[in-house]
Image: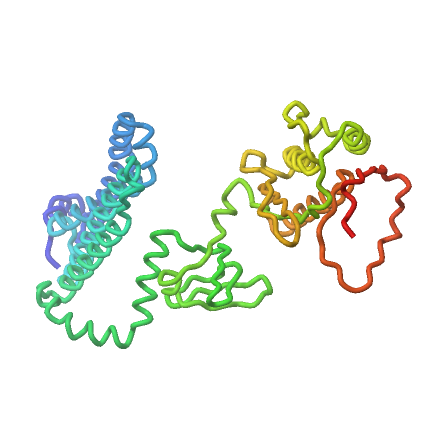
Length: 417
């Protein structure tokens, strides 16, 4: 162990103290460590945040969105400066033996390369984020190019670190890649595919823990419970577990319901088939009968009704008004009641809206309640649902009908014998 310049400067402080050499060594190392800590805190907490605030004032809307990326870049630059300072002052500050010196210098150089790669990766990410803010970014996406640049940066960093550890030239390591790559591809094919797929999944946020995904080719429909290098485990809604190769999520297609869960509502899309023989034009006396059973004015603007109007038109407008006033329906999203193409099973009336509550059980209950209500009010409008009846049909007699409004349907709507 040789005396460093710093140790020689502080040695006179411990001349009259026992174990002066040991104390001066400890003091020199402590001064070096605290110097690195001071440089890190000064750059990380004071200098770079001040520069970031000044730059953000130039364009708060655009640069403000990059704050998380800029914070990560500031941290990595501060670490890079500490590594550079450590290597530059090592011989003058840290009194260690030859073995420790070699290990610490190698470690410092490796960390310097790692943080340099991280900084370059952050700069590429920031450049990509700035590009995505441009108007034409959607037409010409560069996310794939950014991922390739990051992958090349990672490979170059690994080669440089290996060359430092082995004390060999990078060209020496590259010369043996041909034979190594051939064997590696044969033995670790699935692992390599899974590794590349994992990078793409993480970079693009295709899947994460807790996502509800549906992969029809593998019969998977449930929640992601494990994301491994080679496999992805999905707990299905029947509590079975399906295992999917990781690379198949990239090579094939699957449905991720995360966007629905993060959105403002869950879509409801159901239809009722109406018997077309029950559709007729409504007269004033029939509309008064409907008003006696249902306050149409609470759901329909009568001034917007065509003249004449059909009972189906009244029902469609009532159904739309009913959905708009429902507390559990998100009216800020698409909401409509429309007619579909008539079929030999009647005229389909489709109800299209979004539930505010996206939980499965609540969603199903709300959907059933709405359909129950709309089916129950069909007779009030003189409409009949279409259904194919086979076997013996007995009309229900358990429900009392004395209090129900009696709607007189015009003769022209009687079913044809």
